[in-house]
Length: 540
Image (cartoon, rainbow, N blue to C red; front, side):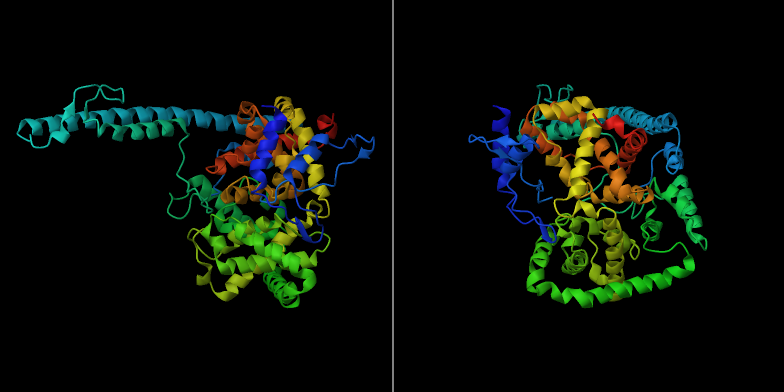
């Protein structure tokens, strides 16, 4: 089947799942999204299309591609070396060598873990085989003693289908062992790691019932507390420490400081918090009642539709009181920022702040936590803090959400140019099957990879983004490039448009944790220092 045929089938199947809808409300607006039309427009690019009548036809304005759109500690001492360089303008060769060292260390750890797992699995198999043989002997002895009234427990003399020469019970029982060995074989092929729930456990992996902190983790926590304890917090030192991850115990205060929500001076923090929270409560009284006004109805209706779609698998975000909090935050932000208004995707950006600030008041896991058990004042403070920190984030990337979303257009184009330089094989492969970067990377930029990663990974990623200068607006580009190249083998294995699109929109990151995020950030860091100050390196 031709590539065009595959693309038509792909869009035909998926169009029903993506109903046409206004993508921006109150501010910039776009007409309903037609995936098949959009694919044809992208294929044509910016070149004028000539109609049979000889008239030139330009492509329509930019449209959004898709409307649906534990953490832990750092691993390996090499991260500290990388961290020390984060705020310095160093020689590129030195930086790249250090980043390479982090990645090489990760590879060696994985190989060693695979060897350990293989040895452990072999030992388990031998022990299981011995146990089964003993069980068989015992049952045979019981049969000889006169248990002739149970023929269904008779033994077959043929070899076991498991291939290890063991005897098995009657054929009706033989298949019982087969799935077990298949499962064991799968486990051997995967790297060993602590079990992580499918609905991403958001807390650090070293808390809530898991083993106590290591000496290194305790040392890092102590360093954070020392920096935060001074009368004037050294923000540069705090950024250096935060680059490779922030301990859960100090993450709320650290995020508030790095985002600029709180001042570095300790004495001014409490008064600043009180003033900003009261200011937000005033916004609720001033603006929220207007949600039913005719000229604000579209904004509120779209927010009301999108909120239940926010992390639908995590019970925390399906609680009515949490959804009301998100509605107020998003509506007030939209009213106060008419240049962009509310845009689908902004709803995702509230969740990391809300989760981190809930952690300030609880010790248990948060995904099933009932927020009604918190005092009303505490919940209002969490709401206000989340609003202001989200606003600080969006101030740096607001051109992503203004009319036609020019910030995202530029970043997607820059991503394409960057990937063409760092991995031309992947770039050419996607060109061969007519996959446009806009078709998958729009969501990466619009939602800051939140739809591609578990929430625990997003929180860990944002530790670094807030520590990195222009982390959300600039460093994110290099993270996206490293993220795409991370799936090089899987991309090259796909040989048609449909397969590539399904892969790129459903990348298998559900079981990612801190280790994978650390490697991703190390590679992004290397790319940044190789290309950020040399734009001609990635321009053709």
